[in-house]
Amino acid sequence: MSQRNHERAAELHNLAAHMHTVAAVAHGKEDHLTAHELSQKAHEHSMNAHRLAEELAPKKTSKE
Image (cartoon, rainbow, N blue to C red):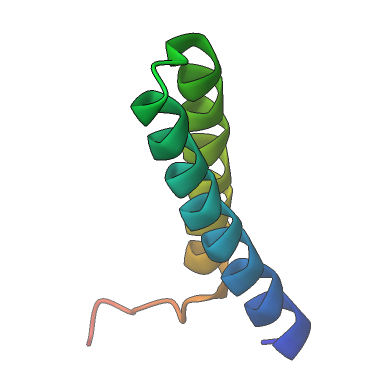
């Protein structure tokens, strides 16, 4: 597995975490439309990070 792929997965996880924080701040300011959009973007980044992490994970065989 490429170190670059692992770095990209970590980057996506960090980006998702950041977007969740930004969305929470927007909710605190009662800017719900923006907060909702930010939450959707955070979810998108989380799902992309999850997919990439699954691709990078070693596949288990039925014998394991």
